[in-house]
Structure formats: C-alpha cells, structure tokens
Length: 474
Ligand SMILES: *[C@@H]1O[C@H](CO)[C@@H](O)[C@H](O)[C@H]1NC(C)=O
Ligand SMILES: *[C@@H]1O[C@H](CO)[C@@H](O)[C@H](O)[C@H]1NC(C)=O
Image (cartoon, rainbow, N blue to C red; front, side, top):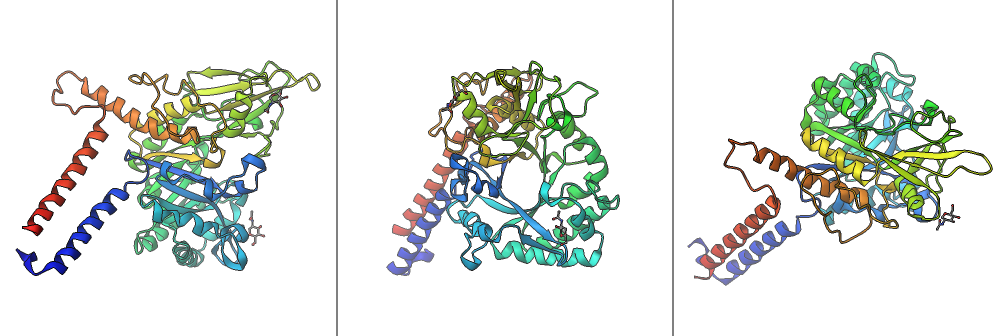
C-alpha cells in the first residue's frame, strides 16, 4: 500500500531488497561452525627460503575466524606500540604494507577479525614489566595503541607478554597486568575493539603471572599456548604437546585447561592453542621417549631454528619414502613421534614429537567437550600451506561416527582443514551422544543439522523476498 507511489520507488526498493539479499548470501564467508579458529601468522616467515616462504597472500581467510598478525613491539622510551619491521609492515617509504594487506582481507571476507599481537618470546619481559608499573605510562600506552590499531584497520590487540612476573619481570606484574587489561578494555569499548592475550601453559607461570579471574573479566579471549611442554632443553626426549599425562604430572594440555577452568576462567573465553610444529631431539640412544638427548635438537631447512620443526618440514621428510624415517603414534598423549635411521657418521638418531592431523582432531574434540570458545594455532605458516604432502588417512580414527574422512576440494592446509572439519564432527558426536540419553526423547537430528538449518534460513529468506515482491507488483 505504502509503495503505490510510482515505478521509481518500486525499482529502487526492488534493487535494495535484491542487494540486501545478495549481501546476506555473500556474507557467508569463513568456517560454517560457530566456534573460533584463531590463526596466528608469524610474519617473518616471509624470509624463509624456497617453498617455506609465507606471505600474507598465502593466508586463506576462509579457514579462520580470527587472524593475528605477529608481532609488533614495545617502544618503552615512548610507552608506545611500534612496528618491528617497518618495511614489511607499513606502506610508508615504499614499504610492503603488511598490516593493511592483512586487514584489507576483511572486505572480501566479512566474517574475518584481524588483531595485531604485541610481544612474543624475543621481546622478553622486562620492558613490559616497566611499562605496566607506571599508571601514567599505562594510560599513554592505552591511548596510543588504540589509535595505532584503528589507523591500520585492525579489529583489536593481542597481548603476547611472555610472561608477567617471569624472565626478568617483577612480582607486581600480576596485578599491574590486570590494570593494563582493565584500562585497555575501557578504551577499546569506545570503539568495539577486541582484546585478547596469549597465556602460558605451565602451572608455575599461571600461578605467578595471572590473576585468572580478573583478566578474564577484561579479555574477550584467552589464547592458551598449550605447547612447548617438553623440548630439547629437557635433555631428554619428550612430547611437545601431550593431551594427557600421568596424574601427578602437570605438563599436559588437559591439566592446563582444567586448571584454568578451576581458577575461574569461563570456558566461553578459553581458546585452546594447537602447535603446527614439533620439538626436535638428537640422541645416541634408540630414540624413545625419555631417552637422554643433547640440549639443542636439530633444525629444519625452512624454519632454521634449533629444536624446532614446522609441520610442513616434518611432512616433507615423512612423505619421502627413501628417507628412512619411521613414526609411532602414542594414543595416551595423542602425539606422533618420528625418528630417523642412525646417522653413520655422527651415530645420532634424530627424533621429533609433533601433532599430526589425528592429534589435532583429538584436541579439537577435547576443546568441544570442554565447551571452549574454540582453538588457536601457532602458526598457519608451518601448516602444509602449499599442499606438498599426502593427506593423512587416520585423522578421524578416534571419532565414533566417522567412517570416511570428509572429502576435501583442496589438499593444502591439511591441519587447518582438519580443525574446521573436526569442530563440526566433534559437535555432531557430542550432540549424538546427548541424543542417546534414554529419557531425552525429543532430540534434534544430530547429523546434517547445520545444513538443514542453513537451508531453512535460506528458504525463509527467499520466501520473504517473494512475498515482498508480490506485494510490490500487485
Ligand atoms: C627494552 O627497551 C630498551 C630501551 O629502548 C631497548 O634497548 C631494549 O632492546 C628493549 N628490550 C628488548 C628485549 O627488546
Ligand atoms: C629423500 O631422502 C633421501 C635420503 O635421506 C635423500 O637423499 C633425498 O634427497 C630425499 N628426497 C627428497 C625429494 O627430498
């Protein structure tokens, strides 16, 4: 009735409706489940040689809900965030503009949130400790960082101080870190910005560094770094990121998550960190877990860091049938251990403990069972992002209702694809298990539920468009 006034209005309204409809369909980018997949990019990976080099253009925004650009640094003399690599990060002076190349992905992928991370291992702890100890410096930092992230179109900030109270920090860091997150939250709320933090996984770090209940009030997400439980520094072979450990051993993913929940972290803010890398060892012994090893480990051709091997480097070695490497799956810890033949010259055996696709799938299921917000990965640049390796066939061996792995259109990013598949499959498994509780008769259909609901919403949308069109043309 209202619309009777002539063809121009009608046409304008029609195209508006059509545009709205198309936009709502086009907006469905990214993962189809409703959990978070936080993807850290170690942006110095661009300097790796050959097929190990990773640039922003290799990032696949469809596989992540959140991207985190790692790392920016702290200029303590100015109490300011700063670029650690202006040529890569910024556009000024013919720079490569990495910040904006990443944040501009949001226009083609409206689901994507992009944060800037400050800190990381190499930044140490002392300067952060000094910054937070002074209320005026804190205030200055909060305002400056807020302007900085907005200037480059980031959606938020990720704090990667490793760690408050540790590595030259002071005991006061614990409460000063709360004050920092509180001040950032108040500032960020003016602009709808996200605030998250990477959180250490070791019990002693958690005890000393974090007032878990307080920081949980101010952070949107806690990214728990559930890895580096063991490495060459132990001087014996161990699991990088064991899902479980014997009862008296706090060095496991399960212990860390249960402990944080016990300390009052809300599951809806906890994000389980998954390593896309392994820890390496060199040993004169057989190469079994707990065998004595040297303190350094071996390095890979791309990442070139003693004691560390990217998943892409590991799967390269393992897909080489003449390399002589063998693998052992450990069901207790959900960890894979690979070892080389003994080197005839050095008499050493090289060993790497790492997360295979099956490890990743099992940990995703663990995160879903604990009703966490989702998972985080360190880091996407060491997934097999080019799809050079064969895809594992045992990924869902520990899933109850999965007979065949879901078909993939692409072979690249096997671990990230596993995360997204496993999230949906684990949620379905949980729903199905709840559905078989005897006296709970009115259950939803567990399988294909997502497809069904999205079909229903699309058809609802279509029919409302039809109704409107009908009222317009009659
Ligand atoms: C801490 O700040 C000082 C003074 O700016 C700087 O020289 C030093 O490199 C910083 N520390 C780290 C680990 O970056
Ligand atoms: C496979 O491993 C063998 C033995 O270590 C090595 O000589 C060869 O170069 C490797 N092939 C590739 C394609 O890396």
